[in-house]
Image (tube, rainbow, N blue to C red):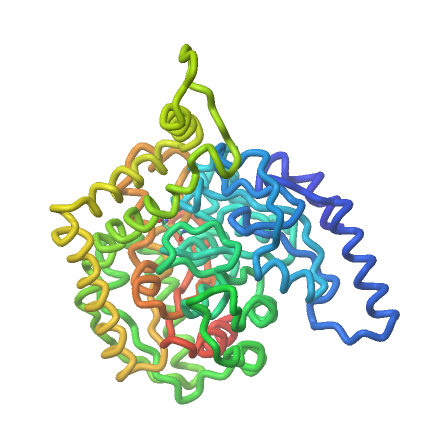
Length: 453
Ligand code: GLN
């Protein structure tokens, strides 16, 4: 059914970069055989899934939305993908994304943008807009994402789907093409909170292949999603997120969601996180710094693309690298590599990267203080509903501002989730509410998310 749906609508939505129909059907048959042989399989066995193209898949192309990796077929699976296969989830294919996960709209994909199924002229969010649009257009019931600054939560918000960024270290990063290693976190995307929790449980858990993976039991996310109980819970509304710059309709739906939580027995308090104001600036120094280092491996020798510089008789290795990186990386990637190498250069390191790391510590302290007063924090997920394709493409700062509410969680490593809060009055488009919890208390996200559903 999903393959039929893909054939019908993906020409317009463009969620997928690669579809593996035969592979998915073969995996589905294997699940039937495993079941017939008496193997007890998990809740999601046989349920197909779409995988963000930032995750390596053995034998299936992985491009990261970049020309640099066009045609690359990884020789191994990311740990997340291994767990999906073991859980019996057939892989439908790979979803579109902003190049190397840099962006908030999928417009930075080298293969063209994905479209928002609510209005095809609008963005489905980013960088995981392939995964959000795949769900909203019913081309897959589940998808995976990665969230470095909001790429799971913001796409979920603008497509009325659900997405979780787990606690940093909660889901293995092994086999994810790294953007910024201290911020990257893989997570589940679904259409309902319970679906998302079930997928979370399959993806999460300790992995010795990832040195930052947390060796602790997976938080009881499925139980929390089933119970949907917020009685006695203290909900902290973050004063600094949701005021100026937020669309009135987004704010109105957010306020209603908070009122609903109160009706359901939660206690609502206001909390202040004064350093969140500097989160965006710190993020856009830390991320490019780490990205410039991570992307150095695309040197024309080891992976993917290799371009021969034109008109050079016997090009040096350096000339081949320069020609390849010039042709293989898009403008946003180049912008960030330049920013990152600048911020890390001697003489500027303390002023930029060093200061950003200090801000990061202050933001973590804001969270600690807020969690003394509240069990979870809430805010609108994104300041606006989906904007039109092309609207912010020439204005990087306007694009970056989409993540103003989601970035603090990445800087502090705490978990966050977006669930639909309703449609904004101005434009009838979906808005989302973001829920944040202390590290390794991911189950609280699901208690609140499920209560709101
Ligand atoms: N939009 C943010 C960025 O461009 C988020 C990226 C992400 O979470 N992968 O950096």
